[in-house]
Image 1 (cartoon, rainbow, N blue to C red):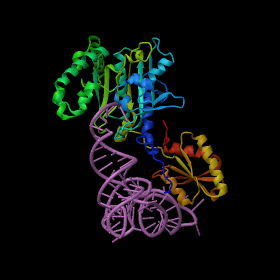
Image 2: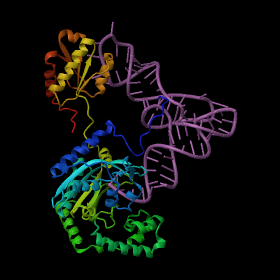
Image 3: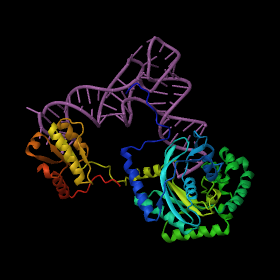
Image 4: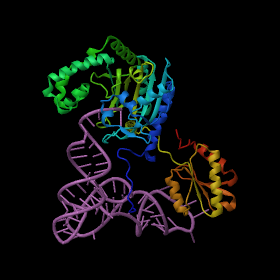
Length: 437
RNA sequence: GUGGACGUAGCUCAGCGGUAGAGCCCCGGGUUGUGAUCCCGGCCGUCGUGGGUUCGAUCCCCAUCGUCCACCCCA
């Protein structure tokens, strides 16, 4: 420890270490494959946007916009914000690049999001989302396809402790009507509302329905149901979606109290929840935002999307242990003596050319044989290649198996060592242990 | 923003009003060219930081910073 003051990481912003990166890569590779198979194209958009974009898209009076955004003025005096979610930027990009005009797009992106919240389990200030958007489709077929995609994703990742909650918020107009009735109802019972809910009554009365306070449950149970205020078209849309999910055999629970925190949602909303992550139980959620594109100045276009919390899913993967084992070396080269070291380094290069899938570790930094073999063992390599002065004098290299039942050491001519190593691995029937995905 | 718990070695943790210990890791030796086991040795700490009480504080008190968990909110 030096006496120099160490620099702290930024609160709520985490490093992903080599010991955990395998789970991230497993998740990302699976997502990439699956999204490709479902016909989605990856797109990349900036992490920073004009502050107004988020105000207009997410809603001026949401928690995210009111108190969670990383906003700043840049040197040119522009008001900018680190994106707190991805949909706004994706939609902005579709508009900016003239991608609408009746066209249809299935898009996705992955990257960091930023919200200035107090960190806790499953909640960070920098976190990552996989964001998927289907633009230009009215549904409900596309709604069903998106949900099927998420269900397939859990299956591929080996995750089973998740369940699907579903609701319809109706159109903006029908929700406004419902909201008025709900406000009336709660206002009539104002004195039995807890402090949080009294505050919500002005801002977002639908959130009162989500209250975790047991004292509030009977009041909530008596509240009018959003479902009863759905307009005819939204009702038909919702029933259509349910029929499609039933036909695909995807189980769900209709949760009339599922409302979502962002203003832009309409009609279909859904959320995959888990009981395995503590208080932050949502791992993937989204919904339809038919009015958003027009509201941001684009051609009126229906759309639906969802966001998945990468850190939360990574935690689930960790719990079930479904990610492939951490990468290990295949071959470890041990060398001693100046001339032998030069020959061994060249041999490593030739192995890397001849066996491109294998992880070849050359012992860096010298050391006696004991130390080098200890490192070879800890590298996980199945095979050590030994090149000392004796071997060099014979123009040979020793192949020493390091694992049980892999035979005894043998020698191969240095000139043909690369193919001898390839031959040894195929005899062992070993596929490369380090397969980056 | 509110509340609670916790900060001792790189990691996991023990400890006690008399200025610190274990295991793991790392390094060396036992084996002058052979790992993983075993044995021996070594390295590593301003006990989060600042102040107070005390003859004396890692321990008690206060403040501060950090981490974790919950509320709120959300992925």
